[in-house]
Length: 140
Image 1 (cartoon, helix red, strand yellow):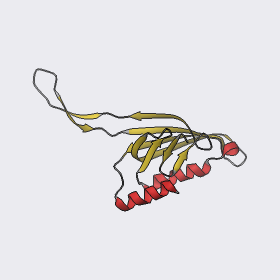
Image 2 (tube, rainbow, N blue to C red; image 1 turned 120 degrees about the horizontal axis):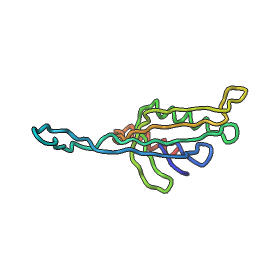
Image 3 (cartoon, rainbow, N blue to C red; image 1 turned 180 degrees about the vertical axis):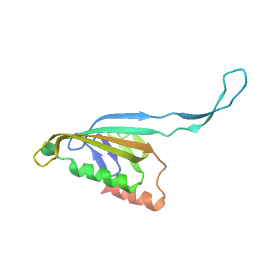
Image 4 (cartoon, one colour; image 1 turned 90 degrees about the vertical axis):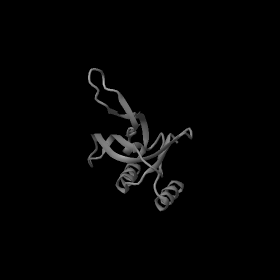
């Protein structure tokens, strides 16, 4: 397993992550002062984003079911726990968008290669009942 997002497992096949990226930072308020550069006051963490790029080969390796599972997670709006394959916990995230580009369409219109970009944003852990449902989903 290369990565786990809630109940969705990213493996070498069929749902193969090829790249990840993250973006984090801080938020600052500018305080205007005459005659000099305005000082900046740190007011907290900025939104943290994480992107996973996935490549699917549905005819040879499958993966369309995992893509549908990802859309189900996105539609739920519930935070899911993200963990790297080496066991490093990355925290709770929600899916903000899923983009897919299909190429080499077969006779049924299904792409032979599907590139998927998954955008995540850090979130707080879900509340009690939702937390329990999320954890049970990860175990299933």
